[in-house]
Image (tube, rainbow, N blue to C red; front, side, top):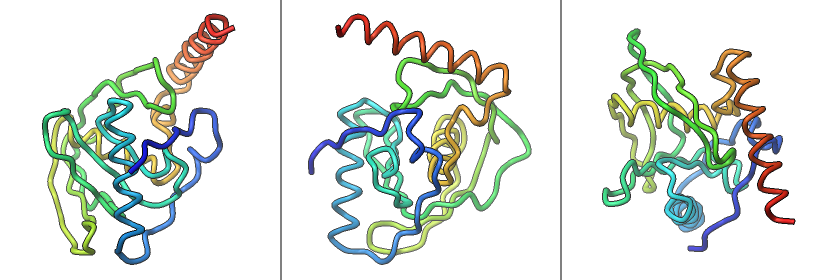
Length: 171
């Protein structure tokens, strides 16, 4: 499937909740394939259909380029540990800025696969952080929304500076 263009911050679609996926079939497989191909092209660890302009609850995760990918349809966090851990986070929709985000250290995710079968998966460490980040995106919560106001403002200033530098370099 083709690599799709990314929705970039501050596009309002990044703050809209995605719609639940109705059914299975070739259309859903095509969306998941587009998300996977785009994920590989932009060297991301996780990507949602929202990032490519599709407001559907589809997530693809591949933490390392040499490992198999996982597709999550309509994922929800069924349980989260009280222990917390911080991991550096960023977004392909806001390239060039990264900031630590604190989240539950372990989670249990309930989701469907491309055939409609229901699953539950426990995750910890980087995988847990990545899943939470992408599930947030499905709910219209952009990663910087998890930062304190001061840290969010600093990230936005760094991002604006990067965009201005890129604009000057491109002109």
